[in-house]
Image 1: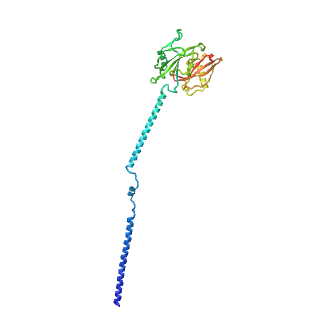
Image 2: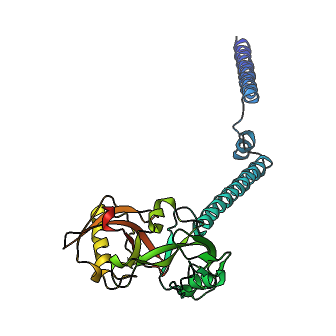
Length: 321
């Protein structure tokens, strides 16, 4: 029995050892199996991208595209600049043309300039008919106030209603361009009195002919005088009352081109309309005297050759009223 118990005990120990070994083996297999499954899972999983990979994998502008876009933008800018330059050039050209037209003598809107010459240097009482003024003498009368030279194509018969064309200066400045003038024979009051008739004088005006609106100034029964009233006179159109006041001042001034202050006791002037100095034409006025006489007047804007602004007044006879 003792041997049996010993073998039984030994057998039990062997079995336990084998069982432990088997368990150990089984545990190892299980652990390996779990490790293999974990490894398989790691192989199937997607690893996180690095910063470099994220940059490479993302959509980034290519180096070729960047400069290309910049180059196109630069080309567009150059085209825009060229277009702007062309537009500015065209605009500048138009403005230059406009300035040139404004500075051109005789351009639209420029005032008609006038020159009243009362001393012709000829004898009107020779009795041999109306005298004639040679073209050189006519040119000298036009040029004298400017200290320059002028040219007239024809001689001028000194009787009312005659005219001749000339070319002469409009300024004492030698570099200023010359301009066409027309010389018209007109009448001015006799030195003694209005009732004693008239003397022949010359009215030079810029342009090729005296405007039709001012033709009354050349009538035989209309005698001219005038007076400058300041460089700003007529800068704006004048109303009828302003024209009347300035006309009365012309008639009563001792400084008029042909003074008539002592030829009548001028007391009042009334005018039908005002005057615009941009248009050389006459407006009708009536002058009354203290004696009760009335004189028909033809009043025109006077842009005189010396640069002064004033009025040119044509005095009719009392029978015109």
